Length: 386
Image (cartoon, rainbow, N blue to C red; front, side, top):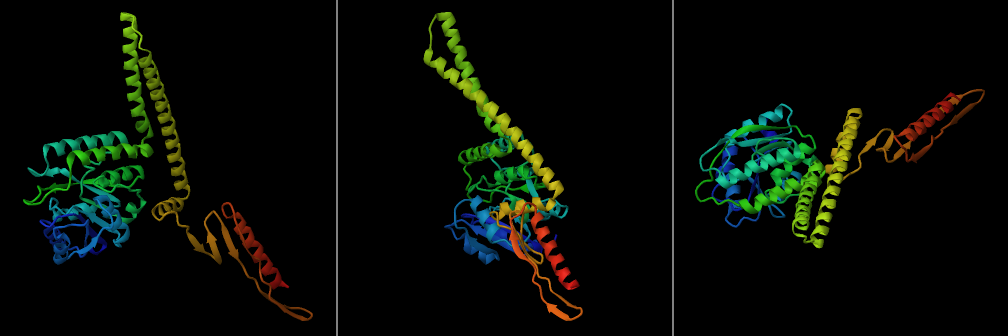
């Protein structure tokens, strides 16, 4: 891949100990654009990155997720992005491994840190948490990317624009993985080396707090990708709780003759609530399956329509305009103009320009546009024949 087509994106916050080495490492690998997106660092990170040769921008918000979104959508113009952390834990020499699948048609590449994790690179707590999150992702979303929390990624700018991303913090990696699975972004995983943080470099990750946020992000995203799990998991818990409480009430009444009316009401409510959620989850899953099937058939019939929908998601639903002897607006409306002119001689000489009908129609599928242009052409031809 031509290095001039790639922007190396490095989101940072207080990475003065490592950022200069990271920037120089990628410049030495032949990349001519390294963009450091800084989140209000207070230790001179921006100055050090700029001195090392990077282009530095300061993000308008806070958090890694917001930095990545702002950088890709507003500061990156190249078609490919290589995303890497600024803490010196990833090797610039792995860049070729990361980018090579993009040449083979993949749209998103995840670097698997577990393939070559050096001693001390990850604490036991973080390692267990990563394994649990990866298994939860596979269970909920039906795909396995090996290491969804990896900060080393390569992707096309076009595929990033198709994603709906809202996470501001470290949940951005999880959200991108979910969007890849949800939108059928061609994704693959490659082995990389993961190094310990250099001495004097402090992590911005809080394992318990950020781990909880990531789990909640996985669950929240299941609402639109796996509604059966989203509603069904709560439904099962509510039903089990109600069943257990109801069993206790029943045993107490049979063995001791003690009636727990309030507990019985609570148990009944929990069971009804759980069953309703399960039914809602099944219906939602059926609707989602039918929706995906309809969209797949639409894209099979008209692939351009699928690309148009992706463009509307990325750019807020801007209308697409085309010109063909006038101005065409997609299926919602049609505007057409036509002009015909003819000159003929007979017993006498008569010359007359005839202007064709010009009008606009709101049509369904463009049929009215076709009829209007056909009438315009016929009218111009008749005048010319006279």
